[in-house]
Length: 426
Image (cartoon, rainbow, N blue to C red):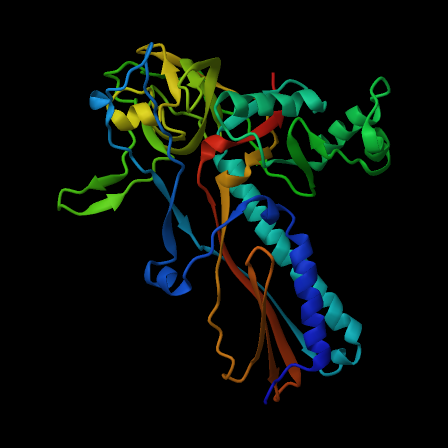
């Protein structure tokens, strides 16, 4: 067959796939959802994924058996997930260059490393941009107390106490390792202090499996100041979740309830990514609906105009019907001009943390024809992410074109189950 792969190239591709699989460190720590690729093509690569239900219970003393007045509708919320990232590494080798087989192997290794890095980066980009559990820390990273604060916030708001992960910038991770390495007064099993000293290794801390990033997003210093928001019932900023919305033409469509458009007094200097709290708006446990006594943190998703912001999560005070009670996430002390306090006062590296079910990868697939003149090989990682390798020989130039491709999507299904640590804040 024309342009067929040699046995040596097939072995090389298997090595590339194995190395690609090993490099997908972060993708192993998020959920995977495999889709029907024919359906995805027909829906423009978008599928709506359900968020978890939150149930309500009723009772009394000593016994209340009659639940006549407590039968209510449950509102199923969902979010759009898109297979929207396609990454490719192409390269050319001449017949002269191919005399050195090591060059082909090195280029293949570089290609797999870049594609794996692209997937890890996209996971971190989504987590860093949309995680709403914000933990600003005064000074540099110290270790246990930093991640213990993130653990406490998750616990207080009802996030599952398992499968928690944190990805830290190299400097912040190494500062934590320094804290462990200098822990002379503590005794760790498996020589944890020695590992921290010898390998700058942190491992599991405060219920988080930690990872070191050789890249990390940066969060700018907030530019807004003196902003206020109306948190009274009539202020128009309390959100009521909707499963679907009906347009004026009668068409029904799903609603993405991760975001809310709010009105504030002024948006000058406010940028996407800014973190803030609102005076008198306290986080609640998502199941018990009891106030945590801690101010709820929010993220700016978009600065729309002089008085309008898109934020996440929405402000759901429990007023406005069954859905608002079911998905209540705050307790509000009403104020017509509640002060907004921005928590990213200084620019800092973003250190995402998340519960596994909050982030999800959607593997995609290229339908590359195998009888169109180019040789094609494909393989799938443990997470279902496909890697496609193609080779084409040009007789005119005696050059061979290679390319490695992958297709995938990343979605943050529940921003209230993920967040960021930022250090060096006042």
